[in-house]
Image (tube, rainbow, N blue to C red; front, side, top):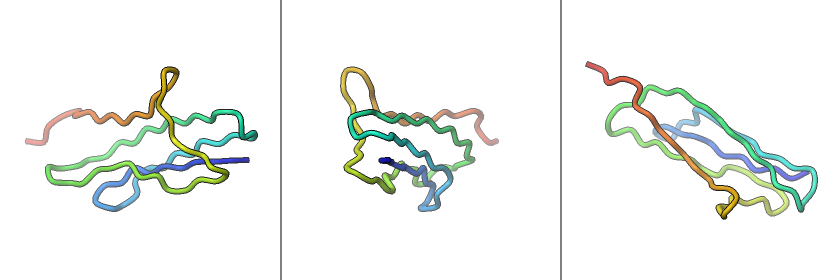
Length: 77
């Protein structure tokens, strides 16, 4: 089995993790994660590749993309 993990971090603290795995080297594994976080202006938010085995990599091509999205649900007063 091969796997790939990625972390969502805020100010260097891991707040979410996804794992994509596949049994065979010629197949593709997919993962989706959802994390809710309260952040403020100046916070450092990033996605970090954490671990992988067997040469697992992220790929973007015509049939799939790597993506990260953030949404402001409401502004603090």
